[in-house]
Every structure is written in C-alpha cells, then in structure tokens.
Length: 434
Ligand SMILES: [Zn+2]
Ligand SMILES: [Zn+2]
Image 1 (cartoon, rainbow, N blue to C red):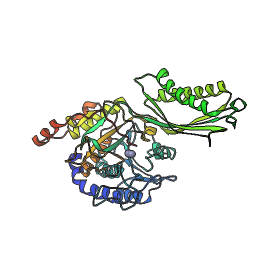
Image 2 (tube, rainbow, N blue to C red):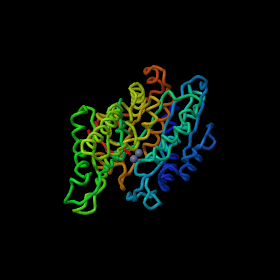
Image 3 (cartoon, helix red, strand yellow):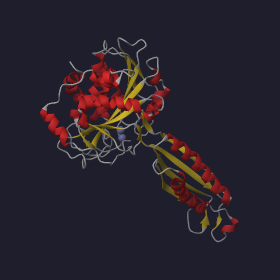
Image 4 (cartoon, helix red, strand yellow):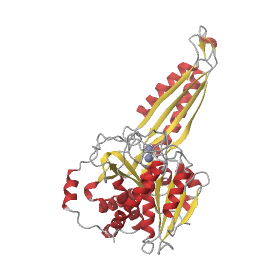
C-alpha cells in the first residue's frame, strides 16, 4: 500500500495521540508528560532512542536496509505549548489553566510519531537512516540549539544529508495546503539592549553633569536612520525600540538611561552587518557626547533559510501527496522566527507550512496561531505523517524525476479536483509562527 493509504489508516490513532497531548499541554524545555506519550507511541518500533539531559527531548534513530553508507534524513517535530488560556470550547481542550497548544505543536508531535510508525513498517525499503527529532522548547527557549549541543545531528553516526520540519497553521491557508519558499522562510529575531552611562546632577546645571537622556534619544533616532541609509530596502531590517527608561523626576539628571529594541532581519548578511554597524553607531554617539555606552545583542533565533534544492524536492513530494494545486509558493518570508533555523544553519533542508484551518472556517478570518481560540483540524494528521515519511523515504541524491515517480498517487477523484480548483493562492499576509 502507498504511504498515504497507510497514513490514513493510522489517522484515528494519531488523532487520539494529538488530543491526549492537547489535553495536557506543557511549556518550555521540560515536558515530562508529553515525553511519556511520545515514548508510548514509539513503543515496540525498531528505534534507537535517546533522551535529552537539559531538556525532555526524544531522539529516535531508524536504520533502513541500506543504512550503511545511505543518507541520513532528519525530521523535526516540536512538542511545547504556550502560556495561553484556551477558549476553543473543544471537548479535548486544555485541562491546564493558562497553558494551551495554541501553535499546533501537538499536531507536529503526533504526525512525527505517525511517520516513525510508517517508516518502521518500511524499514526494508529505507535507503538510509532517519533521525526523528522530538523537540521541546521551540517557543522562545531555543530547544533545537540545546538538542544540537546534546548531539542530535550526530545521533545516527553521520551528519544528516537533509532536514525537514512541518508547521501547521490554523488560518491563512485552507486545510491540506502546503506552502514554502526557497531561501529566507522566517525572520531572525534578536533583542538589542543598551545602557547609556552618564553622570547625574541638578537639572538646572546640565553643564556640570553628563546627561544620558538626550544621548539615548539621539541613539533611538539614529538607529532608524541606520536602517534606511545603510540597508537594502529589498533585504529588510526592522528595529523597534519598545522600552525606554531613565530618571525619576523633572529636576534630577539621572546617571543612566536604558532601552530595549527588537531587531528583525531576513538574511544572515543583514543580521551580521546590523550587529556590527549598530554597535559602532552607538559607540560613536556616546563618544561624541562624552558618555559611555554598553550595548549588546541577546542571541535570538537566526534567519530560517530553506535550501533551494531541498525545497524543490520537498515541494515535489508535497505536490505528489496533496495535488499540485494544494502546493503553493510562498511569496515572502514569514515575520515569525523559528529555532529550526539552528538546524538549517548546519544541514540543508526545508521548513514547510501545512494548512490546518478547520473545514467550514474561512482561512482569511479564522483565529491565527497563538490565539486562545485557534483551532487546528485533526484531519491533516494522516497526510502530515505521510509527508514527513515520504521526505525520508525518497532520499537525497536521487533524481527528482525518480523520486517524483515513486509512489505517485492515483489520479485524484473528480470531487477533489473540483475543490482544488476553488483554492486561491495565499495572501501576502504572514503571521508570527513563533
Ligand atoms: Zn510553532
Ligand atoms: Zn508558535
């Protein structure tokens, strides 16, 4: 049977797993209940399993018949929830106050467990090795970076030739529509923290003090000038100073002023140049006014960059499974950030969005990821598991034609074709995936 048929047969089990995870969401790097559910779902499969130390990750390795010298493919599914109080009214809604799977990571976990089941049943067909990366702490905790430091990229004994991640969306795209793009897929997000150190004094005698406030104000506006004068408008940079604090009252010059900015970039080059040029700018302004500045970037997530060839490959696989019409090219990067970017810095691969808007809801107005009333349609679990599995089953190195012809599904039914033709390409609008 084709992978997609097996996946649909497995779907009811994946729905049960997803709903069990959804009922008991956990936040951050330590997700013991979710980890237990994943291990139970993988029970009995021919996997080499290792657990994280600094986080409750699960790394599972499946070696195929051609594992010796065959390629390694890594599949990532994140497992963590968000500090949101659920308002969906679903009968499997979160039972934990203030915690919700509002980004759909419960679906990713179930789909990846499903892929492990599908691929284990095809171990003899596997041309190489598959690493299943069940990852906590995507939502701001850089769990992927921790898993890399604990060796997930070397779990199979050799580096993956390719890595893939799926992310579901409760809005924007109809269910079962896949969207991706080569190159930048998601933004880099970092925090710039600045402290301007002057010398306080009486408000009536500023010449006897070193006032940090006008210097810090000058820095805020100079950062905007830096963005517009030194960076290509087609490689955008966004700096927003969202926090600015100094002083206690009107007639006292304070010793220091502090501000925080969020910085978004869409290419590693722009991110690196911004770091260097912003710090030089701030230092220069401080020097000019006789004060000192300490400024630095808190490491956020880098740009998520899809590899051209692997994106073409993944798009082909998705088109085979979903139909050409349900596989759309994303016109611009998403403004959210993703820690799968750390994996893609070291391994070529692709990050794909999979529409999971409930049937009957309008993708243009349905509550988006991270909303308290965001609903993700369970019906995508089977096809999502099949997509993960096919990305590993058709190994890197084979020609696209050969990969595409393998397991090509039968001609879609007339009903599906009619529905497909009604689909419209996604709007330019993007959402914060993380
Ligand atoms: Zn997410
Ligand atoms: Zn998210």
